[in-house]
Image (cartoon, one colour):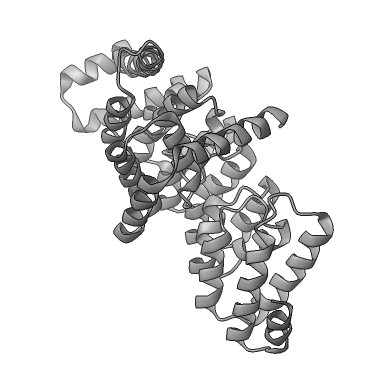
Length: 347
């Protein structure tokens, strides 16, 4: 191996640097908690290699490491800030390494395509959404307004509503996730959604708006949905419902956040960690959680379809993940789950 690495390090071509970086990455990613010195050396090799690699090779490498929690910060920032969207988008969307400061710096300086990728992250802080709603085009505004994990400052929400203008999709996105917003923000977006919807509705609907029935109804529906999830979890724990039936039902309604909450409850993995596993490109994390929880193959295939639509995954990759899940030993999943629980408890 050392001789091979030495030969590759002497090859300064794009192909040679790609092969060197891939080989070093194989070694680096084996250690889930690399030392500071190892991370620094790896980051230096990656930086030198990326300098000469063509776009296609950089994109392939970025896809491989986008969701890796042990990826050194400088490497993640280098990939996320790449001017080519093919290289940057998965890192911007999935990397757990990028800080709010990293994301904000890229959102200020990079094209709209990069902002859309940032707007699709599992969670977004107010400082990042402030920039997205200030600089973003209509696609960015629609994406971030529909992101259930995005938080808004009062000023950011004002700017989103101001720039969203008459875009009914933005208003409906916000109204649909009103239960995740602070009280004053929730009330405001529900009222605005009702006002915009009135343009396409009859006088009966207008009367409901004036009387405040529309915001009340949407808020009631949100409360009912939260109650439904709690009841589903209770039914599962009391063996009144089958897990596969619940999973399939939630997937059919495209309720990724509720699905993560249910799987979190039956696996004792924190909801945020489960949600990240569900919505990151690499399927191994969610596969381990589902196998340990007892999710059947057909229900897991439904989860894969949800992931495919959310993450733009190919049918071939979904089929591979399904085949891998079928062959995943339950005892291996249980050991992995115990490790994950210990890590989350320590954190």
